[in-house]
Every structure is written in structure tokens, then in C-alpha cells.
Length: 479
Image 1 (cartoon, rainbow, N blue to C red):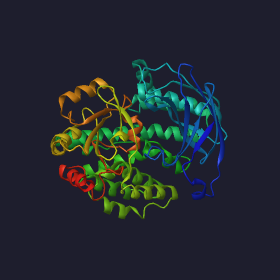
Image 2 (image 1 turned 135 degrees about the vertical axis):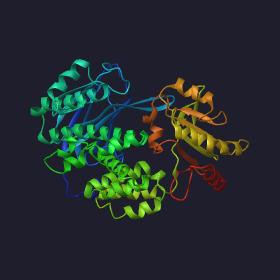
Image 3 (image 1 turned 45 degrees about the vertical axis):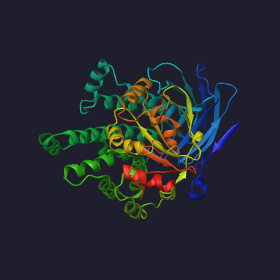
Image 4 (image 1 turned 180 degrees about the horizontal axis):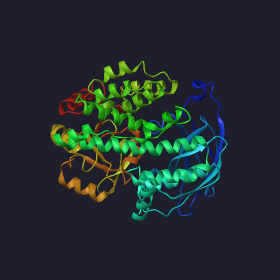
């Protein structure tokens, strides 16, 4: 049985675009057992902008064997795809990421073999690609392995000598890999993979610059200000401008470049200033991609969200980006809270639905998060104390720690939460757990208040959940 979830009205909004045939077979190692697989095919225009649910087609397939054959249509000549496995047991449905952000082109007919062993990383499954269009993904497989696991010392020395003009030996190794596979992939795939390698390295450099500036003293900042940082990505000449729009990392680099420019010029660097600067630095699709990324990830911490929304209205001309902007506007109103089932510190499963007709305060946090700790100690603890004898108000914390021992130790310390709360754990999945996606958690701490009617209120617009006073005001209004 095949169930298809569509991204929604794409053919209507892009009526002039043709859908192209593609085929991929997913073969699962016999040691891996799943009830079904999901193939998510995402438009390359949107990359990792946090929009893969909004701009993706999802195909869910069950199979009596360990081979899952997917035949589908592509919106673009080339798209990214990811694969997830689903298991269903007494505690509910569990989703496991098996492969992420590989490429498929019009006319491809390939097989991806997902193995159970090979690399010592629970979130990285070894892959083998075969068939028509497979070599670009075998290239990506090697690049991802370099990116995630690094190189042995002998490889670092080898690639440093071969690419002496590049300071980063990981980038040198990735470029060497791209060149090795160049003759076995299309020109567009080659350009896309090459740019992603260069943009990844540039985004890392920009992030390091940012961290050094923030943590540095005057001498460090003066030194950074005098540096003329050279990014190879700035010299990239793709076959057309859409290569830049489609990159997984290029837009991230541009956002950090705008932020670093604000820092160096001694301008104010609050999130509103970054938004206006980053958005005005660019135009067209890139402007819309950067704008929607910052709106999705940072809207709850804007100082003046209403003015941000008013200003942004004219930016979104592309139908798909405009649709997502309208969805974000609607998200300022309360939404229906999604149910979840998570274990507590005694391994008992707790369901949100078991607290009907209660006001729920949800707090997402993790060990080592300084803002999480200060928010609890300075604000949330005061609210807990106020309602500790009120049976109609419940406090639920959800930790995205991956190690249960780390989480349980933090519970005993009482600096992130207390035993007055119902403390739950994402079962080692961390930020990849479904509840994190369901509640659009991008930054921590994340506070959500659910009313008796099941509507969830976020820290947005005229509702401030970042202070004890704001929380108490909302709770009282929902009684």
C-alpha cells in the first residue's frame, strides 16, 4: 500500500512547470526492521531553510520484503531526497532518519542500499548507491563521511599538499572527491555539489569569526576587524544563478556574513537589525529564502514582530514563499496542540492527552543551555511556585538531551526544572524527535502554553512568555 502526502497545490501555483519522472528503490539491510519507509523529496530552491515540510512531497510505502520501490514526479530537474524508517510499538510510532539530503534528477533510476553497520554513529547509516544517477550520491556519501568523521592524519597531509592554497584539509579532501566523480555525473550535479562544499566551508569560517568576535577582547576584535577574509565561494561561477539559490549552505553563509558586517561596523546587533540587514543585502529568490529562514527560526525572539511582518509583506513574490509567509502570519494565532507520548524519569509513558481540561505550560530545554537555566531560575520557578497548589495548571518539561543519565543528573540538580514539574525525555532522539518538529522548536528555552480548549500559545506577537509576568498573565486569561 502506498500513501502520498503532497506539499499542496504546487502544480496550480507553478502551472507552467512540468513534473518529471524519477525512480528509486530503497533496499534495507535485513538487520533493520521497519513497518514502512518515507521518501521525502524536497525542492532544491528551499534547501535547509527549515521549509522541508512546507515544500516537500512525502511518499510512505509499506513492503512485504526489504525492498521499497518508489516511482514519483519531480518538481525540478534536480531535487534533494531523504529517507526515514517508521516503527510502531506499544509506545507509538517512531521515526528514524536513514539518509539525508541526497540528490535525484529527472530520469534517474537508482537503488540505495542502507546498511546497519559501518560507522560508529547512531545517526549515520552507511549507504551504497547503484544504477542510473547513482554516482553523484556515492560522491556525496564520501563527502558526508569526511564532513562528519574527518580524516586520518595521513589523509590530512596528503590533501594539504595537493591543495596548498586551501587552509582547511577537510575542504581539500571534499574538492578532491568531487573532482574524482566529475566525469560520472551531470554538469548541474557537479556545480551543485561543488558549491555546497565551498559554501559549507565559508559558513564554518563565518561562524568561527562570529564566535571569536563575541567572546574576544578589544585586541582580538581589532585583529579580526583588520582581516581580509578570503572565501573561495565568492569566486564561484555556477552555470546559472539558480545554483546559488539552491545550495544547502550558501544562504547560511550569507546570513552570517551580514551579521559579521554588523559586528565589525559596531552597529546594533539585535535580531531585528540582523533581519533588516540580511534581507536588504540581497534581492529576488535569495532575499526571500533568507527572509523566510530568519522568520521561521527567530520570530519568537524579535523585539518588534508586528513591524517585521508589515515590512516583510512586500518581499514575498514567489508563490511558494508567499504561501509559507501567510502560514507564518497565521501561526501568530493559537494552534491545536499535538498529542505526544514521552517517558518520565521512572520510564512511565506520559501522554499530553491525559491532561484534558488543564492549562499546560510546556518547557523545552537541554543540559548546558545557559538561557534555559536562567529562564527557569529567574522566571519559570516563580510561576511554578504560584500555581503549585492549583490542580488545573500543570508544568511539563521536555528535555532534548540525548543521554538519559545526563538528563536525570540535571533533574536532581534542580537548576533547569524541579520535581513539581512533570519531566519528560525525548528518548535519546534529541532535537530529531517528532515533538520538537510538531511544536516548531528552533531555539531554547521554548515555552508553550496550552489552554483548556487544547489551543497552544507561542511566545509571539503581543504575548510574551519570556517573563514570569507574561506567563502569569496568559495563564490567568486562559482560566
